[in-house]
Length: 209
Image 1: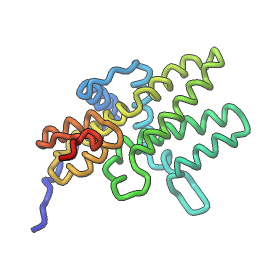
Image 2 (image 1 turned 90 degrees about the horizontal axis):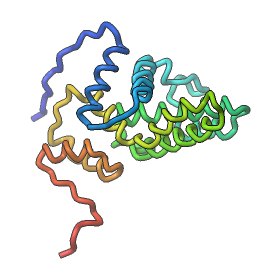
Image 3 (image 1 turned 60 degrees about the vertical axis):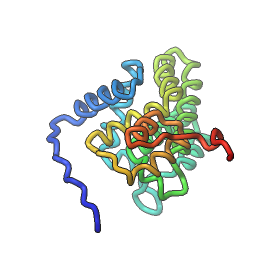
Image 4 (image 1 turned 180 degrees about the vertical axis):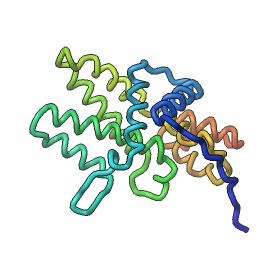
């Protein structure tokens, strides 16, 4: 017999930026993640920007689609100027954070999983922070990108929370949540598994009988 999920109530939103601002603040508190106000503002801007599909997807010879992360990294490596290089790194970090934060469950059926996005995005932000430290103008932004790099996985948890605030987890989620926890060490996935009655154990810590 097929299970039917209860329809979720629609929430009227008059200002998308305010909605994401309030949602991110709630998720940061719930996940106990502390970030600078400038970093929080940057994350809210990412969500507001990518809520418009034309900002997330790009025009390619194959049509309108999301450029693979490896291609974004290649763009940065062959950039004709430091400014273009840094812009490519910034977009790589932004897209990685957004995709890992909002589409973690969908990666289960794909070759490239959430840990790949976390690794690529964290490195992109870290490299960008190093690049920007070299100029007085860039130092203020460098601090934001450094914090994004250092707390990338925790911020993915925060965005998972924003995306799923109205979602009630069932036992159908257990396998995927366990997989996410094994690959990323996500405290959020660990906590949800515990609420579902599962005690996650690292494979390497299991004893042979």
